[in-house]
Image (cartoon, rainbow, N blue to C red; front, side):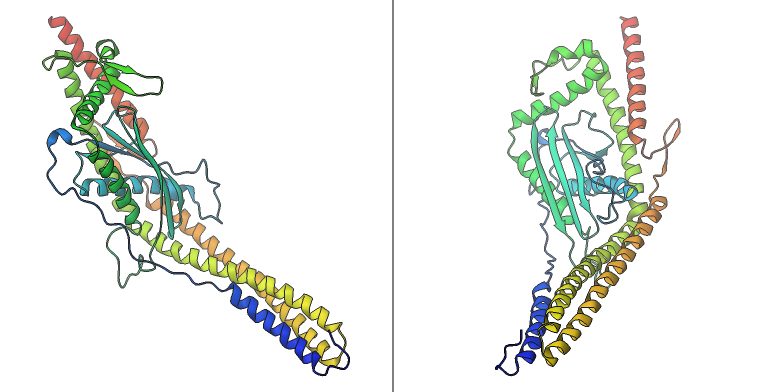
Length: 403
């Protein structure tokens, strides 16, 4: 506003407008700090007695598509999430095995394998920069150990080709899950672990012969199993169940080859996607920030310029026209940057589409057949369990005939 009798107020207004815009620019600037530190893996420091070892099954992670809107803005691509659900399970299983605190650790297609400890997870966010998962660990007794959410942001050096870091970009998450599980297991008594292993065997046996093995277990209203008794060690039906269980383990071990091949085949394109996605996420965030700031500042400059132009006085009008012109440029710049961000999103979509062909599951040769283990791997496992039941019934029938 021009105040009569006070010379230079026109220039003062123009300078004030300029200072205001500069202050807005400074206030909107952000600085991101990255860290390269992550939680180290805890390794069992002594040899564990065989009777304290628990078998672990890591279920393919839920890709999280049912609770997450498939969106380019959020970088959620179904084909990638499906691949990641296997990749994350395999990587976690490797970390658990490296902790040396467990018996065999296997990736399993479903939680219905009656294994000692089951790990289930769901992907909440995965865009190359941030990985967030929800993990639930429970045992065959029906006791939930814990449900936790784990999240980590990749280091700026995670995808540096000149100075590559060892391990996965989000290795800290897998280490934290493994450490939490090891800590929980270390707090279990020998009696609890022995009962847990027996319950796993009885639940498996009951699936094949409910009449013969149901009496050994009870289940409370809240789903907790209790062991009432055990069959004799030389029980013929128990011996057959154990042989069937060994065959089941052999099949699940065959699946480990499938999962390993799958992860190996997707390793290179997946890490390239992560690296590009990491860059795209950062660039999009910066572009959107600048677009928003430019739009806001441009609108403010236009409003201020209009006010200045109408305040009276040649200098004020001149400053007002300059502000309006500059504001219009900032607004246009904001929209241009949004268009550029959209281009990056489209580039990510192309990357996601190309991944689908590169991470297709492999064909696995079994003893008596060739199967394709893809999205129907759980169906394959269900078919295998049916075959095991047929084998068990045939052997049990032969036993009854001989008696």
